[in-house]
Every structure is written in structure tokens, then in C-alpha cells.
Image 1 (spheres, rainbow, N blue to C red):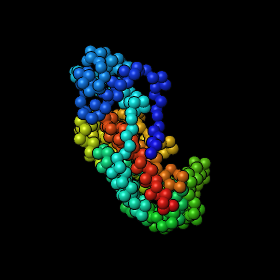
Image 2: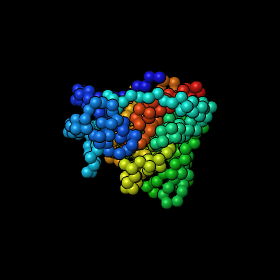
Image 3: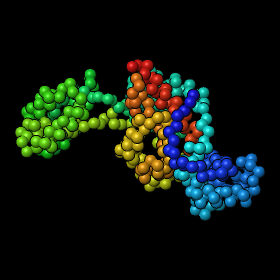
Image 4: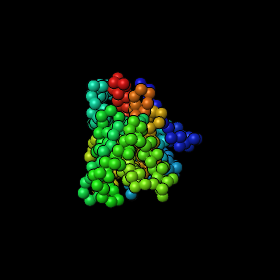
Length: 356
């Protein structure tokens, strides 16, 4: 099975000799496996290359000067930098086929008869279980969400319950915060106004049209229109399942020493809870060709500086619906996780397609 991996093209000209590449590859693989800084004697014993420790030290010093390696603290060993990992992933990594047992497990458990929500939940759990890292799957995005009916009910403390019926029979309940208390009669009037204008139309476009009208005719709006716009701005806001993801196995990240700092874990778990940054990163993969790999600060979010995210889009009927992936430390087995993400995206797409 061919795996398409989107390359970052960070290195337009290969800056390394063949010997340096072999040593970098051996060091990255050893560090990923053991999690300890790698020294020249270890490489001399483990590479099979007829090189002395002194020669290897010189090559490692060159790699460090070029930014591919660094020395943590006062250790005599070296560890890969983000630049080192990137070169390894783009130029040196040999992707391993996903184990037949794992492929069979994915095929068996991604049941086309299951609901979409169950498929997403299962896929995230499988990604985590097989990788021993965190698995994430975006809920499918819809091209269009059609408003059928909206109803408003007054609550206490200037709050309003919006009951929004979309598409065929899907009901979304949202708590709105209003500028003042509204009577039940006022809310019924606002709901009737919105239903008359927008029932059967795309809900996101309806919200955009109302906000545009408010900007253009703010001063001339009557009270009913103002009330309806205030309610619709919140009630019709994109959200819920369409802007959500399912995350599994995040506690497995606590077993990695590089992520075990309490403050770092707190920020990372806060980001998982708030979702905004991770959703924004996954959004970047919606129209990617194949697997995307973000290493450390390449993600663009400080909270993920010690992590890597490997992601791929999935879809149905030729349309991209969402993105799934694996989150772990930069020291992850890329050659195993890349095919896992790729195969899972294809099998989830297949399960969704079979129901289309």
C-alpha cells in the first residue's frame, strides 16, 4: 500500500554527506528507541560502520553545528533537534508496513454499520491503542446545515434556551446570553421572524446575512429585528459536533519523560480541553495530500513544542469530512505511526463510503 507523505521541503539542497546521513539516521533511531542521549561509542558499536569513536565524534560535532543535534545539559551524548527529526522524516526514514494484525483489527472494529459518532470514537481509540500515544479524530464537517426551525425559551439571569432543529431531525440546544431579560412573547416573536425568513436555508449563511444587515442598517433597525439578530448571532453560530473532535489516550503521554513536567502537562491538557489550537492545526490538513507531519514548533503553537502531530484527512463520496491523527512526543516511532494514520484514514473513509 503506497503512503503519500506531505514533505515540508525544508532542505532544498542536501547539506549532509552520506556518512553524516547514516550516523544521523542511526542516532535518531537509537534515541527514539531508548530515550537516552546517544554517544559516539554507542554509535560506533551499533552502526556497523568501520569508523572510530573519534571520527564519529567529529561528524556529530558537525551535525550539532548544522543544528541537527544538540547536547542536553552536560551529557556527553546527543539528541535530535526538530531540524534533525525533520531531515530524518523527509530524507532518511523508511516507512514500515503496518502489521497485518493491526490492519485486521482496524478493519474489524471500524464497522460500516456503526453510527458516525461511534466510528469516530472507535477510530480515536484504535489510533491510541495501536500507537500507545494519543489518538484524535475530528467529527465530520458538513457542507451545509439547513435550518428547519428555531424556538427560544426564557431562563433566569438574562439567559435564553435556543432549541434549533437542523437538517432532517437533528436538535441542538444552546444557552444564549442576552443584553436584557426578554418576555416569552418577545422570544416567540423573534423565533417566528427567523423561521419565516430562514427556514430551509443554510444556517451559517443565515447568520452571515443577519450580521451583514445589522452592520449596514444598525440605526434604522426596529426592535424586533434587533432582538432576532441578537438571538440568531449566538443560536446560529457554528459549533457542536461539526467543530469538535474525539481524543483518546492523552494520559499515555504522561509516561514520556520529556512531557512529564507537571506545568507542561497542564498546558498540554488545557489545550486539549479548550480545543481551539488543536482544531486550527487539524484544519490545516483538511485539503492536504496524504499524511501531514508537524514536528515540535512546526505546529505553530507553543504548547505543542515538545510534541509531534501526524495527521491525515478522511472523507466520503470524494469529499473531505475531517482529519484524524496521533499526538505524541517528538521522540516517536514515525516509521510506524505514519502508516497507522494513513491506513486508519483510508479504512474510516471506506466505512463511511459504504453507507453513502
